[in-house]
Image (tube, rainbow, N blue to C red; front, top):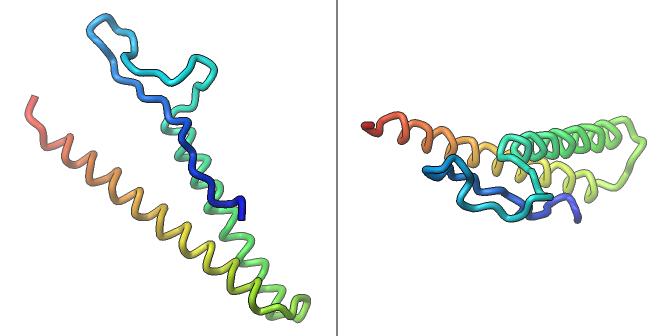
Length: 102
């Protein structure tokens, strides 16, 4: 059950008037939002592939445990739904920022 880990190593980067960032958790931790997003998408893809392999093994008879297959499929489904909700929130935030007057 280590597939679902909360990642709280997000660097908050807000430019100040001097051009430096105001908030930063640590200098050693250089995770950007894009990298975290890419890693999360890769994790969802890995869970989807695992669910596909589990269902293929069940259908071909290599695996007889339907419970582990259903658990793998549900993990993939929940992670995909979460990814889609995060995408929807990002798109909504982008559209809101686009509507702001400068």
